[in-house]
Image (tube, rainbow, N blue to C red; front, side):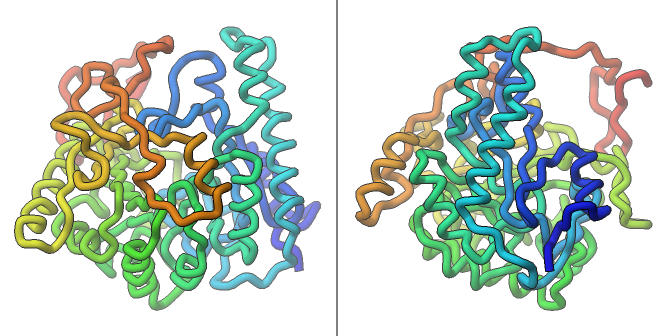
Length: 400
């Protein structure tokens, strides 16, 4: 049984949305920030927070299937769903080779585009990072360890995102993932069922177990919170309780991106569910306050406000004991050459061993707002209200 057979409606829909399907169950797609950095117009929040070169980042997945049908999924649920792997398995070398080939084919198409230099295209044809978060649940792929190892063998870093529904797979991950994420989309069982629409009946228990397993990992661990106004933004104390389970190195908090009707009936999203950056900032400040109150009580390590990328409506909190240099100075960036050297050595290492200092322009409250000053910032003319209205009112969009 093939997950996405040639000639199937699922494959046609994914292709129409810009996905390049690899084999029978994998895919790759060009990120908008990859295109932006090719033109010298800025990088994604991972560039701001962790120093990736966005034009050298390959967004891919070895599993187009997922165990959730999230209301905010920008794939519009055209991908398969399942609670276990029941499909034909493609070889991990075939997947990596295919992803690089298709990624480079898409990069090559930007030759001659205004602002894209031959040097940037040449760099883009040599991917250095892989965001295993494109669509579906990458960790479902039975040979995820071998795939990640192959990426590292080619000096491509790995940013692996999981929805926390497969704790056994997290437990079996080797400690060589560059950065391991668990998506924390809700602070309680009721909200999780409403927003993620999981297939597993014990989805909440699976998520909590997955979070608790992060404490045992040596690589950088991240909670990834997607804030959806009216759905999951109010119970901040609940998120603080979840942080105690895994005590992650880093906590990303990002406002949801509206991508049209999510097919959730009465729970479908609209622009009124999209928070402003000020809302996300306030959420992060309160979460940090709660966590540091817990720190005083000895429950969790202290966290600090490390970085923000205003354009992506995204903020980063980091553990002070691991990543704070001094007041306002952090080491959230990654020394990628050092990471690959440590992996190649075969010796055990810790997340802090490949940390690098964060530039001042990307830190919390910097006037650059997380935008790399070495690049051209292009601001679109929009008719937004100069003072954001109430958070529960829909933001104004261009043309209104």
